[in-house]
Image (cartoon, rainbow, N blue to C red; front, side, top):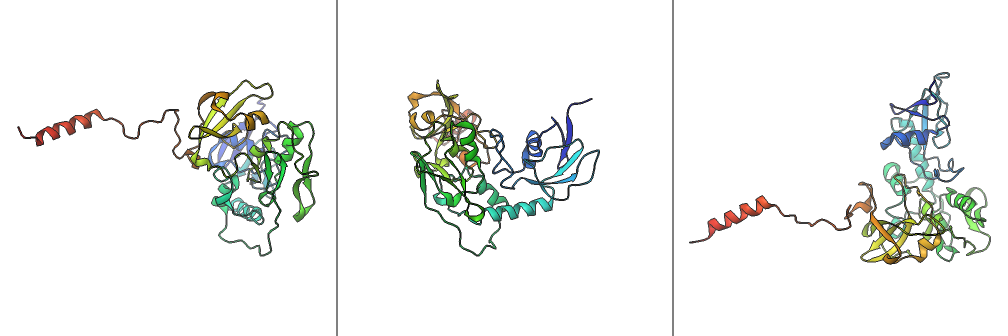
Length: 334
C-alpha cells in the first residue's frame, strides 16, 4: 500500500505525502498553477490563512467522498486527500475571487511603487498587475500612519502593511523575546511596538526579508537605488551566529545591501543575523561564490549576467571578419 496520496491540480496529477497542503502540492508541480501566497511562509510555523490570495476550488473532495467543497478554500491551510481534484487558474470563480482579494488588499495599501524600496521585489505588485482592477469601489479615506523606527536600522511604514503577520512569526520563532505585534482590531489593527525603537535583537533584520510589501524597510538601503540597477551576488563568510550565506547587492564596486538568499517563491532559505546584514558591507568581508540566479521574468534580470565577467557586447565572428576583409580588398586599386 502506497504511503502517498494522489491529488490533481488543474488537470496535473501528483503524489505527495499525507498532510501536505494543496499549496505545497502545487509547488511540487511548479509553473503557473502554483497559487500566489502573501502570508504563508514555509519556514515560519503557523503562518498562512491571513491574506486569502491562495484561494482555490476543490471540485472533488476525495475518492471516498467525491463531493466538491461548497466554498473556495485557502490552499495554504487545506491538506490534500487521496483522489482530490483542485482548480486554480482553470476556474473562473477562483480568478474572480482573487481579483476581489487584491482589490481588498489595495483598499488601504497606497500605490506608491515609484518611491517604494520594495518595487521590483513586491508580491503585491505582481498580483496587482495580474488581477488588479482599473478602479476601486472603495470611496472612503484610506487609513494613514506616521512612519516609525522600530529598531535602529528598521523603519515601519504601516500605510503599506497588509497584516500578513510574517514579521511577528519571525520575532516569535527566531528571537529570544518578541516586543512587537498586532494591536487593535478590524480597521484599527496595526503592527506596532509598545516602546518605539524597541526591536534590537540579532535576528530582527529578517522581518525585512519576509515582509511582502515594503512595510518594513532597511534604513541603511532606503532610497539608495533601484534593485534592477544593482547586481546581486551570492557570497558567504564564517559567521559564528548564522550560516553566513547571503546575497550581496552591488552598485558598481559598492555593496549597498545584504539580504538572506531566497528561493523561487521569494522565501528565505536560511535566516541571517544582523551582523551579516548591516555591518559587513565590504567585499573583503566575504567569499564571493558567483552571480545570484534570477528568474527571467523578474525586472532584476535586466542587464544581469550569469558570470562575474560579463560577455562582450560585440563578439568576434571570424567568418564575417574574413568576408569583410575580402570585400574590402576588392575595392582597393592595385
